[in-house]
Image (cartoon, rainbow, N blue to C red; front, top):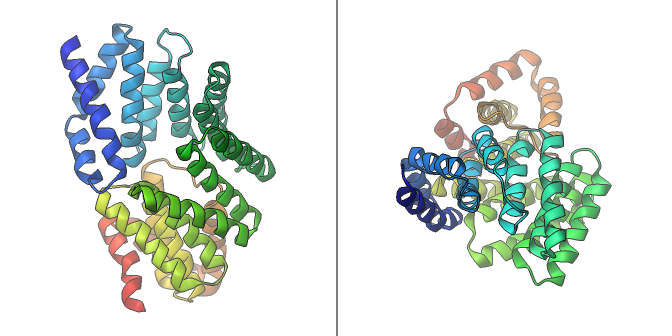
Length: 340
């Protein structure tokens, strides 16, 4: 590895990363996968040569790859190395702290995540940078929603106000998502539906398939609780189908779990238990923690299903799902379409 090769790989990552959100995501993801060993070698080269800005740029460009592939431990390790490099508190560093925060967040390491998001907020306020401030507030809102829903909703409202004041549409989109999640957790389902519907319309208009899948899965959860099971099922299947099309592994366990919850409501208990096991296997393989909006619904199934079908039958079906490959699990989940 030399400077010219490292710079070339940085350009490749920065050109390819934005395509992970659209219809060409699967090819872009594979391209980054094919070049991955060289990309991280370039990252190490920048760190070793104290080319901190280039290291920050490359880590930020690889953020979506690490999230999409559920490589949270790997991403956390590289962000720690990059952020440990010398340098001033630039916007690049603030953005890296935001992206770094999501790695421990999805591993359930909330204190570590909050520290990263907090540093990003400090930098954003020092620089007077509303989009960075909104992103950092969004990260802190996510952490708060696990233990203090009221605080999480307050932070999300603050993020929305900051982004709207700066005409920051990506920040506004994220804040709408968080307001919907907070309302859903609090049981304000009609409010949640309103926020999520706004956010889904916004991301559909931009063609960001990654976010379409995520928000469709979230709205599915709300529609299920409102007893609109057909609508909920269509949204969860859309999320899963998009994920398969673009190569996104991140939304997959949540969409499968959502379809399991719909199966519970339809008294398809064996199917539900099998899907629960399949979702658990995906989460466990990546050491991933259930987010605050998903966990109560997952835990409810762990309580309801053994009572409904008997503990032994639940354990058997759950084990079948747990041993399924990812493709078989998706096939089973999407088979709901044929059930009417």
